[in-house]
Image (cartoon, helix red, strand yellow):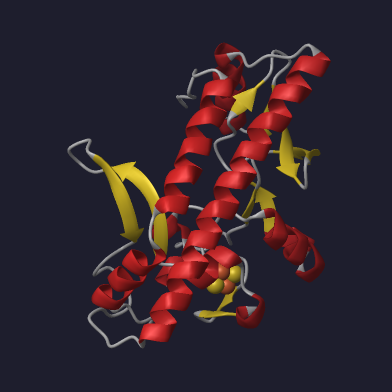
Length: 237
Ligand code: SF4
């Protein structure tokens, strides 16, 4: 059963705003130093472009605008919608890249182990495996995480020029800022939309409809994009 935070929306907005403030304060030089120390180099193994390795690839609005021009079929509502109203309509904060139905769940754009839109790949694809957000470790202690999948892909301890480390660090901060800004905008939008339309999140309706979805029934999902919601009706592949 999917567990949705029952924290009221204003508190969630406030928490994300604080998170964004902490991000601003994180020195870019410190992140550049970590990039240098880690010394990651991509070996084009393409693992990170599969669902087996990486779950789903969430897109920022600017990427959705691009992908709609490249191939509108390549996106789908991101999984695990945040809300479901009393009428059974789900709401999610954005789109994810669609995966193929092969064994590893390859990205829609992965062909023969190569990205077929490499020069136009999306913001998250450009900064990966770097990140800059806080999450709990296995002991529950919350701390910053800066690199994903250490020793699981690519090669490490390589020499990365200072200038490249600085660019990676700035772009990673920029991505995380854009991500948090999009999440905050989604929560503000849903707060307003629910209030104007007499809607509210109902966990039981969420769970019932999600169970039905997993059994093959279609669900209605409103996807946040460019400050508004786009309607989709989806069913399990
Ligand atoms: S768009 Fe390209 S780089 Fe990004 S996940 Fe898909 S195949 Fe990989």
